[in-house]
Image (tube, rainbow, N blue to C red):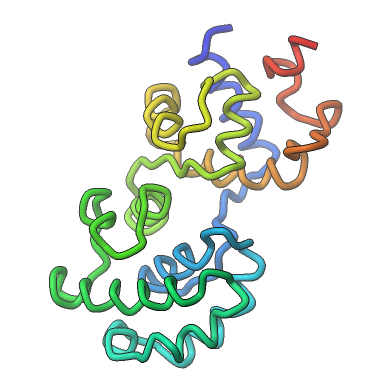
Length: 210
């Protein structure tokens, strides 16, 4: 099987295993998802979901964040780690959205990555989940699984993103990334992957090489 064929098999297998390809971050609107994703850097989604209800309740609008004291936000998000930088970024994101984008979260990778603290992973998530555009969110689970399947031979997120865009059907790419996260947590663990219980063990190159 070539890489394209493996990618299509992986898409089908994970779609059957995880029919609901959902983001594990809780958010009610594009700005909340953007902020939650920024908070998730070097932090688990579960931890982020514990602090965002308080944060979102205190700052319900973009304007609220734009005039907020970063120290107040930092107290709420303290347990997410790197809280001082993240709080400054959140305020800066809101201010730039208001000043440069008429209060609307932008819908392109180029514009999103102009926002403070927003990298390609976050930008792809917003483009895919909010705006329904083809996207590849190159998080640690996707990178690990893609390497084990033999789809890529790199741990560089940008290279993984570029290579997977060539292999994945555009309409499936965003959901595939969410499913890869679910599979990485449940089965394809970094240290002890459950290869015997994996729905992709028939074509995974890591297993076939054993």
